[in-house]
Image (cartoon, rainbow, N blue to C red; front, side):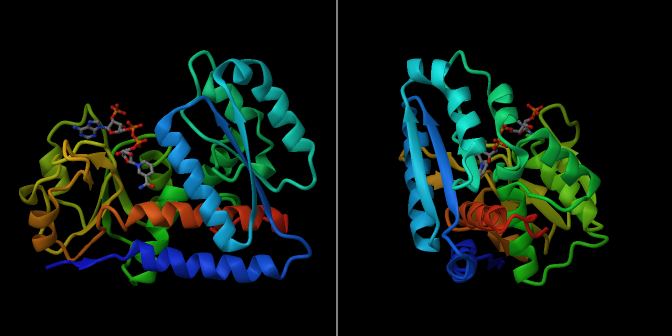
Length: 281
Ligand code: NAP
């Protein structure tokens, strides 16, 4: 039976450390969150970020724009936040309302305030292994592996999902830590043959029940990033949790694994931005 990787407990420890370091600065770190439109899930995520900031002694200010306002005002707002010395980090909550191109919006954020690590300059730095911000979800997974002393070097890491948010940057970060990475996607052939070779299996697709126990090697580490809703409204990952838990050596629960770690890493990036240096990586 696998050990559950307790993302909630580790995230609490990281946030306590952020709070301590933030308190030692001459002024509290400040995060500007931009929420455009009325997507209900985004409203919940933004409230969560506001709570995390309060917990960490980080000032947060949420700029709410209606869809029509966003089309006119979003880019000028980002430009003024870029210039504002009292703002350390800027986060634009995705998805954006129709008619707004996320690529142009994310590129408008000053790289030194890009705490989500979406700007091409920061993505490029990460790809080159240079110091800089790291995207929150992959960084959270690496922090979990490290906290449980799970080695990466030389291990076969199989990642399901190649999004810019999770799979792609995680592949680079695991490679930088000397993991041997196989990055899978919707066109991958022989998926189960690949997953069965994984020492570390990352599920980041968004399809409940995709990963069954027969796809997992005995003793593998399973990191389930996905957040799917069952018809009853329960949150679940991509893995068939009870069956896979019985076979794995370590596994992230959903909820309580990758989710809280993502949020804690955002706080760490805001602190790093406030310190004016690069995020620890
Ligand atoms: P996404 O942009 O929709 O990407 C999904 C990826 O899965 C794509 O690369 C897709 O391949 C691949 N895929 C689809 N079907 C597949 C299959 N049968 N086998 C292998 N790969 C397949 O999703 P995302 O934004 O990365 O999010 C993935 C999941 O993680 C979602 O459930 C999301 O809610 C969750 N998430 C959680 C956190 C957290 O903090 N816990 C953070 C971010 C995301 P193609 O590229 O070929 O289309």
